[in-house]
Image (cartoon, rainbow, N blue to C red):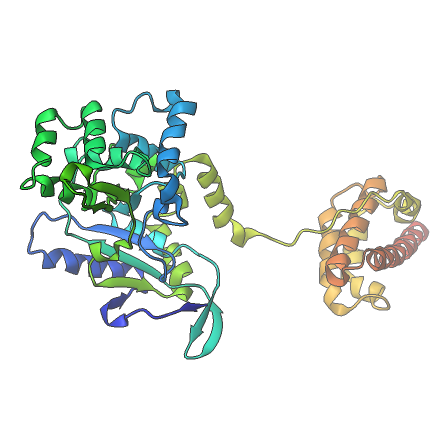
Length: 422
């Protein structure tokens, strides 16, 4: 059971795109015109922690496996990448668990992700249990100086992510691996093994980094994507520095973001998503892959959906009505439509007359002397209409037959009268 225990003293409600733009503008003005960048993260559920996917469900224990096996199985997919961070970026793009946390420099992109429909969750509010769409939240930070994939700190953390630290995990073993990979040199290794300089290394592996990635895919570019590279390696001191042990660990990254949080009530998500669409922020623009393009097209056309009748096999008995309806005269069409209520009043409710009238009108332009296919079409249309009303196929067909018989009798009378008149 989820508890809606957010501290709303630090929360600012967003109920429209314009209100969020105003809030972001105020944030930037508060920076006194500095060039400090704001980084945003939108989450569709307010009770989620802020953590990269590798920190969830104990996946951190197999991170080294997830990092290494794709390079062994499908090396050609990564031949153009020069750094482990770039490889991790591609993993992230295709849904692999990594220690990268998605952020964006575009606040409207964050708003979109905060407004994604999650589905109802159970809450306990003031001892009452209810189900509702979770509130979305937007976090932001301005406390990071941006790094690049080739920065030494980023290379070290990315390399450690690929190591199995359940085995070779002493400082001297780690330094040796980093030196073999040419990430650090012998001089740096010797420096960090000294007590007065060891903290330089500790600081690197216990800080997080905001990394501006190489835009190797269109999705990153369209989302103005950046990554928070989570480090969080713990060190257990040994008898001497080189015997100290490094292990992988995790924690909620909430402390990396401002205390001020924007939130969107669950009931307001859909309206804001529609408004964002006016700004060209939607699934199709943020996810350029074909599957997302098609999903967006399907979604935006939902409102055009109309009721579709059930399938009915062609009934050859309709041909027996051919002679009864064998008249080719627009006067007959007019007569049937004008007198439909009187013709069908004994068997058809008033509310159904209009629908049957539409069915006849849709077929009025067809040659009445070639009635086999027309009769079948009319019968199927009337049967389909009644099936939607009764959800009973047998009853619907029976109703259609009665109506066709009444129409047949009327056509026969009309034809006879015309012939007498001639």
